[in-house]
Each structure stands twice: as structure tokens, then as C-alpha cells.
Length: 240
Image (cartoon, rainbow, N blue to C red; front, side, top):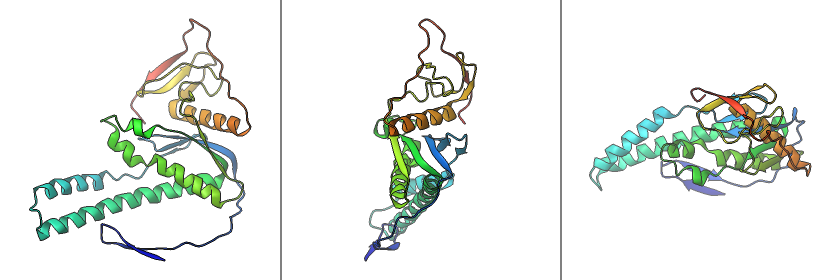
């Protein structure tokens, strides 16, 4: 047993126990999960899950850090302010982790196969406009939690598909490929089958299909549009 004290002055006790795998009957065969920013997780069932709003805590942290930078080094006030900022950061982290824990538990508990996409987070955070939001989203944490919970429950599996799969640029109904889409495009009308696709839901359905194909040792083939044909019509609207 290990006693740990963090920078916020909180104490934790860590210990390890052995447990037997849990047997829970899955409700669905599988689910594809498309991770994002405004909508944290879009499921292939059509459900959209939004993360907890911690903007108030974030503003409080930034305000406290500006005040900390102006304080006198070595003073008691600076020490109290540092601990207060650490506690606020710990509270923000706990809210995010609690939400991700519950999301991972529901995904693994209700589905026999959970399919995620291998995101290039290290490359995405180089975008100055989205670096803060991407870092706070906790995409990697969701994947790690799903994999850990899948090991605790029998007949559960987490599959991670390649980041190069054209999940956003392919129609989930007919497999017609319309190419890479700008982030501002949230809805696409496929000219091959006439279906209007929500960008995130369409991607999550393709993620599930690619994961199940990989699980069965198959290759997911897409229907390519005819040369010279217009692939799709896009509708630009605000990000959901």
C-alpha cells in the first residue's frame, strides 16, 4: 500500500488487488466511436455525447496564473496562490476523468466490440488554434480506459483502425468516396445514392465497418466514383 500526496495537498492511498473477470451480456454487437472537440464522442448508433463544460474552471486557472506571475517569489501569498491553482486544476482534471470513466464503462459494457480511430494527437496539437482544446479532450485517456475495462470483462474487445482510413470522406450507405472534407463541412449529400450524411455519424459508421472487417480478417473496400463525376454536394454550417 502506497500513500501519495499530490501538488494540491491531497492524499491518496494506492493498492493492488486481484479480481475475477466480470461476465456481462452485451446489448449490441459493436459500436464505432468518432472522437471530436465540440462533440466529444459520436457513436455509430447516432448518439452524440458532449463533454462536461469546465470553461469556468479554465478561466479561473488562467486568471490565477496571471496573478501568480505578478506575486513576489518566496512570499506566503504566492505559496497559497500556487496551492489554490493546483486544487482548481485537480478539480478540472477529476471532472474530465470521471466523465471519461463513465463513458468508457458504458461503451465497453453495452457493446461486444468498441472501434476507435488511431488519432495523430501529437500532430494535431501543433495547430495553435486547437492545441488547448485537443489537449483537454482526453482522447488518449478514453482509448486507454476502454482497453483496460475490456480486459476486465469477458467477451469484450477494443479495435483501433488506421488513421489513414477515409472514414470522413466515404459514404457509409454506398461506399462512394468524395475525398477529404474541410472541418467546416458538417453535412454531405451523396450524389451516388442520394443520402444526406451527418459528417460525424457517417464517420462513426465507417469506423465500425472498418473495425469489424479488420476483426474478421477482411479488407474493407470502398466504391470509387466514376472519373470526371462530381462526388458530392456539401452543406456548410456551424460546428455542432
